[in-house]
Length: 486
Image (cartoon, rainbow, N blue to C red):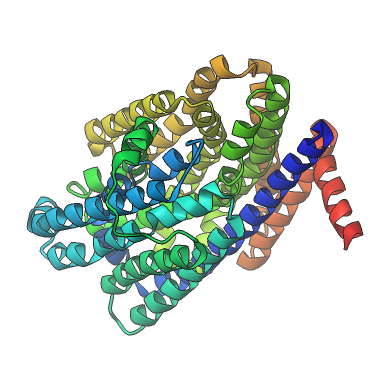
């Protein structure tokens, strides 16, 4: 295969991956948001707070049962049926064992939070990770073979079906049970989709030797995933003893919405970054160019999207889920700022994994998690706003740690960091501040909300056209090419 053909093939893979990943993320996050509005209008902050208290146990159990097997499979040079089969039975075995342990630990969890209702609620909600264990090997098959479209369809179907169930039950006055059933059904539908699209089928041949090869890489990813899930769900685990379920509930949706907005980008980029960088790892100069485009693309979208959500947070909350959730607006603003920087850090972490350095990835996540836990534990009396503000600031500063960690493996200078990331952060901030003051005097809520978004978008396009035109021109030429092909 010629160099030009390889280059075209790589571009095609990257473009298709970003296109499908982008479409999927946008569709799924908007669907999730739409269903979330319906749930928020019916459920209370206390309902969300109760489920949030036990969420960390489910996500940690999911991390243990997955054990980094998906990334382990991707980074294995040759993969056979026995590899997937070993992953399947190991995942199911671990998932079953952990579920049994947590089932009997449910009374202790309820005692920790002083919430008796959590006994039955946690035992049911924990079924989500057990069901998920049956689809891990199939997900690994789809991910390794770049079956992005199939994963998109699976996730979208699971999202729609589970949310229909959840919304129906919420309006039948099932309260927090509606939210819990939605979570469990999502996991079940997702697992069924992975089975449907994957060609892998498990057999009763129990050969666990392949796990030893995979664990060398995946064990570090396991530890990392545990801390990633701790980092995202630690608020409820630590603060649930010091704040009421209602107070905690006001932070749940802002955190979830900031993650949803962030996921539009990270899901899109994650579909291609690691496989593509791995494919061109021998061409150092080309890898730098590809990496700069990926991280610039992420920053170009992440900062205006999440800074923009910060700008319209109060109006957004009022319009979407009414004034009863007004207290959550400040939390949405704080979470979004941290999420914007975390979106960019995600590209650095993918680079480090593609270089076969999971120990570096693991170290960064663990240290971040320890610092975040320390902030929440020792500062729990400072108030929720200040605590979450400090953890969000830590997210923003941590991008320098990721940069320093990636520097030994790629010739990516500090000047590139400023040009590819912070330039877009500055332009987005200027655009959003301009939009805020330009529309602040508008009395009508809906008109002010729409005008602020419109002014921010126009301002961002203008300043990019002046100071950073390259991304805009590339996107314009790409879409023009697509239109011409049609």
